[in-house]
Image (cartoon, rainbow, N blue to C red; front, side):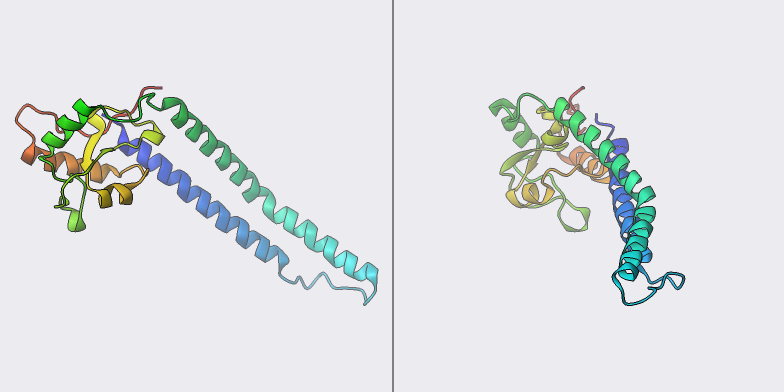
Length: 191
């Protein structure tokens, strides 16, 4: 079973930190470009304009030093995470016919994804989807197989589902999986 909660929230935190740092960087640049009463041009000459521009450039560089450094650090962390995902990828991308038959039979041919109001989608399943995305290191196994209609499969894309979605699919599976069958969903390739 995937430690989906930890993976999901660490990636959400990384995205939030990146967005906050971009905003911080933008506001820092805007504030550094605001007119400063202490800096005035000494006259209409070239030296006065040069002095103002040099002062503005130095203020901008001072303002972006800290958020820019944090942005670089976050980019490095994101590159490491993506690199680990690539190394973790299952060498087999497609589900076998046997896995597909078993997964579709387990779902009784109906989409297992969520429709509105967190209920099960009522459309027929057309695709076998990796619950934990293959591109993010999800395994090509029956544990990670979810029957999905075309619309739900496109809507999910390669996003990591939330822990709540995982719990709700497992809860719904208890209603239609035979006793003794696995209701767990999501599996990640070992590194």
